[in-house]
Length: 189
Image 1 (cartoon, rainbow, N blue to C red):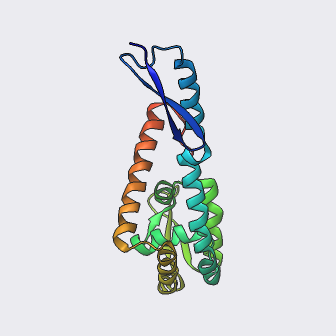
Image 2 (cartoon, helix red, strand yellow; image 1 turned 180 degrees about the horizontal axis):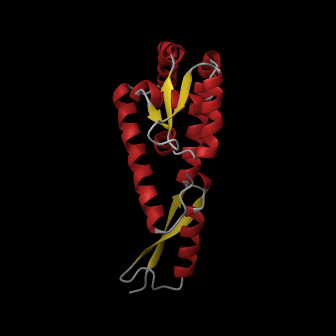
């Protein structure tokens, strides 16, 4: 019995779906393979594009509130860690935020110049740089809470949906880091 092609429209590409006893063993298998490849390369099918667009949109929502606090997004991420954990080290910040120390050092320097954080060398190991909040840094947390609320409201999602989205994104990140480690890809941090 000869396989027959039934067209399936996906995105902007028409993919013939093969029906018959041995799909893929027909004279149209090359056409099918090309259509699948073309469909997989559509911009709207790319996870990276969707994540990139969502990230840019979310950061755009943060920007006005953070500007009112005099913080950049990178500075805000550092402050979030410190508000949650209190004192930490620069090495721990690098690990938690996924930033390299060359990126983090100027961020910490600017926060220190503004009087929001204090950096100190540990007495038992001079190589370890401790980072902690000043009183002004602690006080800024009250104003920063409103920034997070406004971004959450802008998404239009419920608290339950936001929590679910965070869990899904964490899972995607964990699985992708694991996959990239298994493939030998270098860690950007």
